[in-house]
Amino acid sequence: MELDKKKIIIGSRGSDLALWQANFVKNQLKEICQTEAEIEIIHTKGDKILDVSFDKIEGKGFFTKELEDALLNQTIDLAIHSMKDLPTTSPAGLCLGGVSYREDPRDCLLISQMGWDDTKPLKLKPNAVVGTSSVRRKAQMMDLRNDISTSDLRGDVPTRIRKLREGNYDAIILAKAGLLRLNLDLSDLHIVDLHPAEFVPAPAQGVLAYQCRESDIDLRKKLVLIHQKEVADCTNVERAILKAMDGGCQVPLGIYCYKDVNGNFHIHAAWSPGIDQALIRVRQSQSTTFGLAELVLSELKKS
Image 1 (cartoon, rainbow, N blue to C red):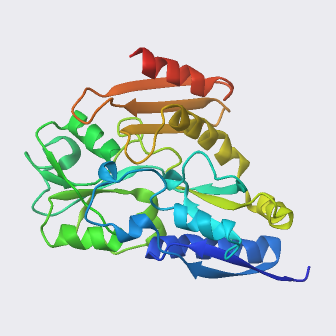
Image 2 (image 1 turned 60 degrees about the vertical axis):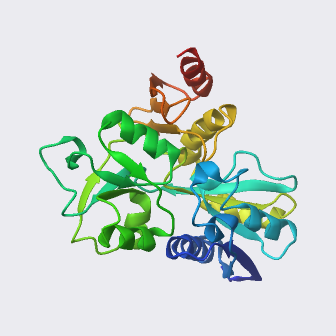
């Protein structure tokens, strides 16, 4: 099959991880859809405001709004998002065209030599300082180790790791997916992978979202070819709960759904009404996703 002569303009943030993600989709479009694409870098509010934690920034879509505006203005054709950053409702005229495979969904601790203590839970020394700006991560970390303190940490993945190496923190929390995709040398640091049942990831963590214009039927047909339906079965449940809880980066809510080898669905949720309030944990399993989000929501709200 010949390459489609119409070149797709992909909008992406400018970080190393965002460009890895955009190039991944660019290659998928070429190899599977026989369509060429080029990447346009767009800077978002979340990229520009680096001295404020997420819970103190008003509104939603810190990392997505400018990309969505570019879609609506037709300066790009396709926006690639880390799905965990994408609001659950698209602006009028835009839609979710597909999702990627799911990379390892876990969070992980990167611990400096000074912060390491393999006799303690999570391998963190007593009274360690952990870098993160995520209220979800702060709430779950305090639930597991109430002796530690958290300190805000912003910037792209290499910047966060550099701040750890400079001694600003004893440890930092990052998404495992980003570390795997960037393939960074972390040999001087200790890595502790956090089990998703114990330290529940953000909804859709490890998944890429493909957003486009509703009216772009040709592109939507191409995106169907690279869409991962089994991943969407799980992320749809996670994001339904997120939407019902009016969630975003400011809400301490973790949700992880997966399908086992027998076809059963399992979900873990962790939510705190406030950063200083007790964490509520819910676990449910059933043979279908039908009604699963509602079941978890009822348990969260009942608690």
